[in-house]
Image (cartoon, rainbow, N blue to C red; front, side):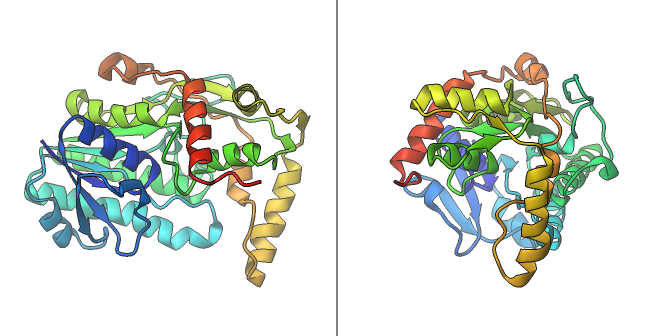
Length: 329
């Protein structure tokens, strides 16, 4: 089978490309001109240059492929990136869906996010049935992922065979940029995390997320969405696991959300306008005020989503960062 991937140079996409190649599928990857291609360097795949702006050019690039994996997204929590976020995540998704429909792709796997599901109510787990609205979502990134998912669902209603996957918080190797969770791991490894806030998240091995995409292609129900997650942990528990892996001491001091919120406001709303690079996103602090816990049992039950221990995934992340020069000093 021949797969078309967007976002192969990213964290999830790079791992998905490797998994498809290991399964002996052919892979054609859309890459932007001048993009960082470390995640696909040396892989036996076909690269085609372009972007998500022209559905007619995309149709030419998709032609001959059996499945499209739309993994690419512009991830940013900075207010200043609002326009480019919607352009890439919503407009780009609509263009790719139209292109896939034009050439008659057999199946389209859309990578959404638990961000599109929303934050569950206190003391509950988010599921595929959890409903949210644009007004309830914090950040333009979350809103854009919600709108892109709605476009994918609409395409399914119009006859395109679409399956949606909603990864939670992947961790592991090949986190090149790195992701916000990768940044937390790096700050811990670099002894730059003296304190933490009370929050929670659902961690999953990025290799399981990649396998979940393939299983969604092979077993998923048209128009259905599947949470690709694993274990719900507080940030404190995650840091304690990292401490056990590395022998470093986990931070013990808890700070109220008001402190990073004030820092973020000064950084993003004031200093960034003076040309200085902000360190903390206002939206990221707002999001951390609520635990983001999810239930991935549907994907386990219907797809056979693997549930490898998050301890192993964190260890792989630590090892990969170390071997690739991310930890200095």
